[in-house]
Length: 239
Image (cartoon, rainbow, N blue to C red; front, side):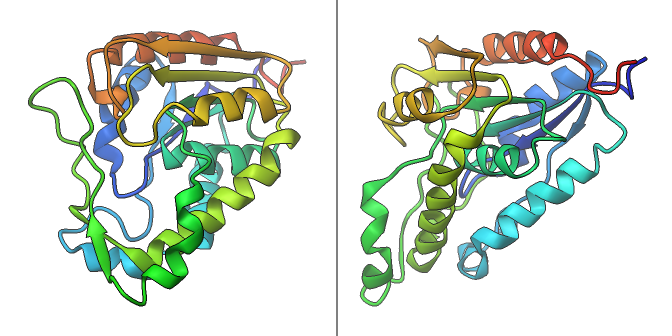
């Protein structure tokens, strides 16, 4: 018999918060899926400067803690939005025994602009925030309005880890990508689809949403497809 109920670890994006994934989490929970959605270090405070001390290592540790919190669940899927997708990929490659499926929404896994962040931070301490790229009016992912430039070097470090991890992924993949994304553009989904090691992988276009699609007009598509994907994963403890 199965080792437990299905579980889902939800990981939000850079400068965002769990609010961006709350509707999805509530939908999955109401459908019988155990849900964990941690707040990434440096995020969720009213002061953008708090993000300056955040590190890629702290973010990956937080993802580990969220996965450990689902220890009684089987199967487990990791769902990542934007930079949360990078964390999901890194985690799935490092802990394949516990990550049985990967769901990515508008993944942020590659950004050539970040290479000079270490130099720029000596000149400019912060830049404008990137949150709330949402087509649907009245939505708010509750993110930081400024970005400490020094933290971009940590994002760059995480993306390098993600690039190394992609070919090692064996778990099934569901990738949902907006056809119009003003935050990360359209280059990231093809990179994931081409480089990921998963044999089972599917790309679903989101035609009526911007970057934070989980709060946008295609939210129901994301909810339904994610639930169906999780339910399709076989339990590892069957016997």
